[in-house]
Length: 327
Image (cartoon, rainbow, N blue to C red; front, top):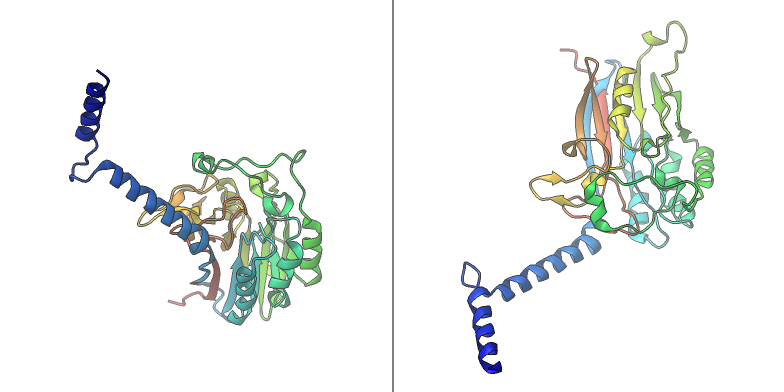
Protein backbone atom coordinates (compact mmCIF):
# COMPACT_ATOMS: atom_id res chain seq x y z
CA UNK A 1 0.00 0.00 0.00
CA UNK A 2 2.84 2.34 0.61
CA UNK A 3 4.02 2.43 -3.03
CA UNK A 4 0.48 3.13 -4.18
CA UNK A 5 0.15 6.06 -1.79
CA UNK A 6 3.47 7.42 -2.93
CA UNK A 7 2.44 7.15 -6.57
CA UNK A 8 -0.83 8.97 -5.91
CA UNK A 9 0.94 11.70 -4.02
CA UNK A 10 3.42 12.11 -6.83
CA UNK A 11 0.64 12.25 -9.37
CA UNK A 12 -1.13 14.84 -7.27
CA UNK A 13 1.94 17.04 -7.11
CA UNK A 14 2.48 16.77 -10.83
CA UNK A 15 -1.09 17.75 -11.55
CA UNK A 16 -0.94 20.95 -9.44
CA UNK A 17 2.64 22.16 -9.91
CA UNK A 18 2.25 23.66 -13.35
CA UNK A 19 1.59 27.35 -13.95
CA UNK A 20 -1.03 28.60 -16.40
CA UNK A 21 1.70 29.09 -18.96
CA UNK A 22 2.69 25.45 -18.65
CA UNK A 23 5.94 26.15 -16.77
CA UNK A 24 6.54 24.15 -13.59
CA UNK A 25 5.74 26.21 -10.51
CA UNK A 26 9.04 25.19 -8.97
CA UNK A 27 10.85 26.82 -11.88
CA UNK A 28 8.67 29.94 -11.59
CA UNK A 29 9.33 30.15 -7.85
CA UNK A 30 13.03 29.76 -8.47
CA UNK A 31 12.94 32.55 -11.03
CA UNK A 32 11.05 34.77 -8.59
CA UNK A 33 13.58 34.10 -5.84
CA UNK A 34 16.47 34.76 -8.21
CA UNK A 35 14.88 38.03 -9.33
CA UNK A 36 14.26 39.07 -5.74
CA UNK A 37 17.84 38.26 -4.77
CA UNK A 38 19.21 40.20 -7.76
CA UNK A 39 16.97 43.16 -6.92
CA UNK A 40 18.10 43.15 -3.30
CA UNK A 41 21.74 42.94 -4.35
CA UNK A 42 21.27 45.87 -6.73
CA UNK A 43 19.43 47.92 -4.12
CA UNK A 44 21.99 47.26 -1.38
CA UNK A 45 25.25 47.50 -3.35
CA UNK A 46 24.57 49.61 -6.44
CA UNK A 47 21.69 52.07 -6.30
CA UNK A 48 22.36 53.33 -2.78
CA UNK A 49 25.69 54.69 -4.06
CA UNK A 50 24.39 56.14 -7.35
CA UNK A 51 24.54 59.69 -6.01
CA UNK A 52 22.97 62.40 -8.12
CA UNK A 53 22.28 66.13 -8.06
CA UNK A 54 18.70 67.13 -8.74
CA UNK A 55 18.50 70.67 -10.09
CA UNK A 56 15.49 72.96 -9.72
CA UNK A 57 14.86 76.61 -10.60
CA UNK A 58 12.47 78.80 -8.64
CA UNK A 59 11.58 82.40 -9.54
CA UNK A 60 10.86 83.66 -6.04
CA UNK A 61 13.45 86.41 -5.43
CA UNK A 62 12.70 90.15 -5.53
CA UNK A 63 13.00 91.65 -8.99
CA UNK A 64 16.28 93.40 -8.23
CA UNK A 65 18.02 90.37 -6.69
CA UNK A 66 20.92 88.42 -8.15
CA UNK A 67 20.26 84.68 -8.68
CA UNK A 68 21.16 82.56 -5.66
CA UNK A 69 22.40 78.95 -5.76
CA UNK A 70 21.19 76.95 -2.75
CA UNK A 71 22.58 73.46 -2.09
CA UNK A 72 20.11 71.38 -0.06
CA UNK A 73 21.69 68.45 1.84
CA UNK A 74 19.74 65.97 3.92
CA UNK A 75 19.92 62.54 5.54
CA UNK A 76 23.63 61.91 5.03
CA UNK A 77 23.59 59.19 7.73
CA UNK A 78 27.37 59.04 7.80
CA UNK A 79 29.19 55.90 8.95
CA UNK A 80 33.00 55.61 9.18
CA UNK A 81 34.50 54.03 6.08
CA UNK A 82 31.97 55.36 3.54
CA UNK A 83 34.61 56.66 1.14
CA UNK A 84 32.47 56.96 -1.97
CA UNK A 85 29.88 59.01 -0.06
CA UNK A 86 32.57 61.22 1.47
CA UNK A 87 34.27 61.83 -1.88
CA UNK A 88 30.97 62.71 -3.52
CA UNK A 89 30.02 65.10 -0.73
CA UNK A 90 33.35 66.87 -1.06
CA UNK A 91 32.88 67.17 -4.82
CA UNK A 92 29.64 69.13 -4.36
CA UNK A 93 31.69 72.24 -3.66
CA UNK A 94 32.33 72.24 -7.41
CA UNK A 95 28.71 73.31 -7.88
CA UNK A 96 29.73 76.66 -6.38
CA UNK A 97 26.70 77.14 -4.16
CA UNK A 98 26.08 80.50 -2.51
CA UNK A 99 24.34 78.87 0.46
CA UNK A 100 24.14 75.37 1.99
CA UNK A 101 20.99 74.25 3.80
CA UNK A 102 21.38 71.06 5.85
CA UNK A 103 18.10 69.50 7.00
CA UNK A 104 19.48 66.94 9.42
CA UNK A 105 20.13 63.24 10.05
CA UNK A 106 23.83 63.66 9.36
CA UNK A 107 24.97 60.78 11.58
CA UNK A 108 24.40 57.04 11.81
CA UNK A 109 27.30 56.06 14.07
CA UNK A 110 28.89 57.40 17.24
CA UNK A 111 32.26 57.79 15.46
CA UNK A 112 30.85 59.53 12.38
CA UNK A 113 31.41 63.19 13.27
CA UNK A 114 35.05 63.21 12.14
CA UNK A 115 34.38 61.56 8.75
CA UNK A 116 31.34 63.82 8.27
CA UNK A 117 33.30 67.01 8.87
CA UNK A 118 36.12 65.85 6.64
CA UNK A 119 33.67 65.14 3.82
CA UNK A 120 31.91 68.48 4.27
CA UNK A 121 35.10 70.50 4.74
CA UNK A 122 34.92 72.25 1.32
CA UNK A 123 31.24 73.09 1.86
CA UNK A 124 31.81 74.40 5.38
CA UNK A 125 33.60 77.31 3.73
CA UNK A 126 30.26 78.32 2.18
CA UNK A 127 27.61 80.16 4.23
CA UNK A 128 25.12 77.68 5.62
CA UNK A 129 22.22 76.95 7.97
CA UNK A 130 21.17 73.70 9.61
CA UNK A 131 18.57 71.90 11.71
CA UNK A 132 18.92 68.46 13.35
CA UNK A 133 17.11 65.18 12.80
CA UNK A 134 16.57 62.32 15.23
CA UNK A 135 19.64 60.49 13.89
CA UNK A 136 21.80 63.43 14.89
CA UNK A 137 20.73 62.92 18.49
CA UNK A 138 20.31 59.15 18.70
CA UNK A 139 21.91 56.14 17.03
CA UNK A 140 19.67 54.03 14.84
CA UNK A 141 18.65 50.56 16.05
CA UNK A 142 17.78 47.41 14.17
CA UNK A 143 14.09 47.05 13.39
CA UNK A 144 11.97 44.58 11.47
CA UNK A 145 12.28 45.92 7.89
CA UNK A 146 8.62 45.11 7.21
CA UNK A 147 7.66 47.51 10.01
CA UNK A 148 8.90 50.30 7.77
CA UNK A 149 5.90 49.83 5.49
CA UNK A 150 3.37 49.87 8.33
CA UNK A 151 3.59 53.60 8.94
CA UNK A 152 5.87 56.28 10.39
CA UNK A 153 8.75 54.93 12.44
CA UNK A 154 8.51 55.19 16.20
CA UNK A 155 10.69 57.93 17.66
CA UNK A 156 13.42 56.61 19.96
CA UNK A 157 12.89 56.71 23.71
CA UNK A 158 15.31 59.21 25.12
CA UNK A 159 15.78 57.10 28.26
CA UNK A 160 17.06 54.08 26.36
CA UNK A 161 18.45 55.48 23.09
CA UNK A 162 22.20 55.68 22.51
CA UNK A 163 23.26 59.30 22.34
CA UNK A 164 25.30 60.46 19.37
CA UNK A 165 27.90 63.27 19.62
CA UNK A 166 25.54 65.85 18.17
CA UNK A 167 26.98 68.64 20.33
CA UNK A 168 30.38 68.15 18.67
CA UNK A 169 28.75 68.39 15.26
CA UNK A 170 26.76 71.49 16.21
CA UNK A 171 29.93 73.12 17.56
CA UNK A 172 31.89 72.38 14.37
CA UNK A 173 29.08 73.66 12.14
CA UNK A 174 28.84 76.81 14.21
CA UNK A 175 32.62 77.35 14.17
CA UNK A 176 32.46 77.22 10.38
CA UNK A 177 29.82 79.95 10.38
CA UNK A 178 26.76 77.80 9.71
CA UNK A 179 23.70 79.16 11.51
CA UNK A 180 21.86 76.88 13.93
CA UNK A 181 18.11 77.20 13.26
CA UNK A 182 16.96 74.80 15.98
CA UNK A 183 13.66 76.40 17.06
CA UNK A 184 14.95 79.83 16.19
CA UNK A 185 14.90 82.48 13.48
CA UNK A 186 17.69 84.62 12.09
CA UNK A 187 18.31 86.95 9.16
CA UNK A 188 21.39 86.65 6.94
CA UNK A 189 22.54 89.14 4.33
CA UNK A 190 23.65 88.15 0.83
CA UNK A 191 24.78 91.30 -0.94
CA UNK A 192 21.65 93.36 -1.51
CA UNK A 193 19.36 90.51 -0.46
CA UNK A 194 18.25 89.61 3.06
CA UNK A 195 17.20 86.04 3.79
CA UNK A 196 14.96 85.63 6.83
CA UNK A 197 15.23 82.07 8.13
CA UNK A 198 13.15 80.13 10.59
CA UNK A 199 13.79 76.53 11.58
CA UNK A 200 12.64 73.91 14.04
CA UNK A 201 14.02 70.99 15.99
CA UNK A 202 13.02 67.57 14.66
CA UNK A 203 9.21 67.26 14.36
CA UNK A 204 9.59 63.46 14.32
CA UNK A 205 10.63 63.75 17.97
CA UNK A 206 7.88 66.32 18.66
CA UNK A 207 10.56 68.90 19.46
CA UNK A 208 9.43 71.52 16.97
CA UNK A 209 8.64 74.98 18.38
CA UNK A 210 7.93 77.58 15.74
CA UNK A 211 9.89 80.83 15.95
CA UNK A 212 8.35 83.72 13.94
CA UNK A 213 10.54 85.52 11.44
CA UNK A 214 12.61 88.41 12.81
CA UNK A 215 10.56 91.62 12.76
CA UNK A 216 13.56 93.89 12.10
CA UNK A 217 13.15 97.63 11.77
CA UNK A 218 10.00 99.46 10.85
CA UNK A 219 11.15 99.56 7.21
CA UNK A 220 12.59 96.03 6.98
CA UNK A 221 9.70 94.82 4.83
CA UNK A 222 10.64 97.37 2.18
CA UNK A 223 14.17 95.99 1.71
CA UNK A 224 14.67 93.13 -0.80
CA UNK A 225 14.21 89.91 1.17
CA UNK A 226 12.94 86.34 1.07
CA UNK A 227 11.65 84.08 3.83
CA UNK A 228 12.93 80.50 4.04
CA UNK A 229 11.69 77.81 6.46
CA UNK A 230 13.73 74.72 7.34
CA UNK A 231 12.78 71.44 9.07
CA UNK A 232 13.97 67.87 9.10
CA UNK A 233 10.66 66.00 8.97
CA UNK A 234 7.90 67.54 6.82
CA UNK A 235 4.91 66.86 9.03
CA UNK A 236 1.80 68.67 7.84
CA UNK A 237 1.43 70.72 11.05
CA UNK A 238 4.92 72.11 10.45
CA UNK A 239 4.28 72.93 6.81
CA UNK A 240 1.04 74.65 7.82
CA UNK A 241 2.57 76.97 10.39
CA UNK A 242 5.52 77.74 8.12
CA UNK A 243 3.10 78.68 5.34
CA UNK A 244 0.84 80.73 7.61
CA UNK A 245 3.94 82.46 8.98
CA UNK A 246 4.82 83.84 5.55
CA UNK A 247 7.46 81.46 4.18
CA UNK A 248 8.43 81.86 0.53
CA UNK A 249 10.24 78.50 0.45
CA UNK A 250 10.20 75.39 2.68
CA UNK A 251 13.04 72.84 2.74
CA UNK A 252 12.87 69.42 4.42
CA UNK A 253 14.17 65.85 4.26
CA UNK A 254 13.50 62.77 6.43
CA UNK A 255 11.42 60.77 3.91
CA UNK A 256 14.35 59.25 1.99
CA UNK A 257 12.01 59.68 -0.96
CA UNK A 258 10.32 56.48 0.16
CA UNK A 259 13.68 54.66 -0.07
CA UNK A 260 12.12 51.55 -1.62
CA UNK A 261 9.82 52.70 -4.41
CA UNK A 262 7.75 51.12 -7.14
CA UNK A 263 8.98 52.06 -10.64
CA UNK A 264 6.33 54.11 -12.41
CA UNK A 265 4.41 54.65 -9.16
CA UNK A 266 6.77 56.10 -6.60
CA UNK A 267 6.97 56.02 -2.82
CA UNK A 268 4.89 53.64 -0.74
CA UNK A 269 5.51 55.55 2.48
CA UNK A 270 6.82 58.93 3.60
CA UNK A 271 7.67 58.03 7.24
CA UNK A 272 5.44 60.89 8.39
CA UNK A 273 1.96 62.19 7.55
CA UNK A 274 3.09 63.78 4.28
CA UNK A 275 1.25 62.29 1.27
CA UNK A 276 3.52 59.79 -0.48
CA UNK A 277 3.40 61.65 -3.79
CA UNK A 278 5.18 64.51 -2.04
CA UNK A 279 7.89 62.29 -0.51
CA UNK A 280 10.46 63.57 -2.97
CA UNK A 281 10.75 66.60 -5.18
CA UNK A 282 9.41 70.12 -5.55
CA UNK A 283 5.69 70.68 -4.98
CA UNK A 284 3.44 73.50 -3.77
CA UNK A 285 2.09 73.43 -0.21
CA UNK A 286 -1.19 75.30 0.29
CA UNK A 287 -2.53 76.56 3.57
CA UNK A 288 -4.54 79.59 4.65
CA UNK A 289 -4.90 80.90 1.12
CA UNK A 290 -1.13 80.83 0.49
CA UNK A 291 0.85 78.50 -1.79
CA UNK A 292 4.54 77.93 -1.00
CA UNK A 293 7.20 75.87 -2.86
CA UNK A 294 8.14 72.81 -0.80
CA UNK A 295 11.32 70.93 -1.60
CA UNK A 296 11.66 67.51 0.02
CA UNK A 297 15.02 65.85 -0.52
CA UNK A 298 15.22 62.09 -1.02
CA UNK A 299 18.39 62.27 1.04
CA UNK A 300 21.90 60.98 0.58
CA UNK A 301 22.19 57.98 2.91
CA UNK A 302 20.19 55.38 4.76
CA UNK A 303 20.13 53.91 8.22
CA UNK A 304 23.13 51.59 8.59
CA UNK A 305 20.65 48.84 9.47
CA UNK A 306 18.68 49.27 6.22
CA UNK A 307 21.33 50.07 3.58
CA UNK A 308 19.14 49.74 0.51
CA UNK A 309 17.53 52.00 -2.06
CA UNK A 310 15.37 50.94 -4.96
CA UNK A 311 13.93 53.21 -7.68
CA UNK A 312 14.98 56.09 -5.44
CA UNK A 313 18.54 57.25 -5.97
CA UNK A 314 20.31 59.27 -3.27
CA UNK A 315 20.47 62.96 -4.02
CA UNK A 316 21.55 66.44 -3.15
CA UNK A 317 19.43 69.27 -4.55
CA UNK A 318 20.71 72.43 -6.19
CA UNK A 319 18.05 75.11 -6.17
CA UNK A 320 18.69 78.15 -8.33
CA UNK A 321 16.59 81.02 -7.03
CA UNK A 322 15.93 83.72 -9.61
CA UNK A 323 13.98 87.02 -9.59
CA UNK A 324 10.23 86.89 -10.00
CA UNK A 325 8.91 87.58 -13.45
CA UNK A 326 7.95 91.19 -14.10
CA UNK A 327 5.15 90.17 -16.46
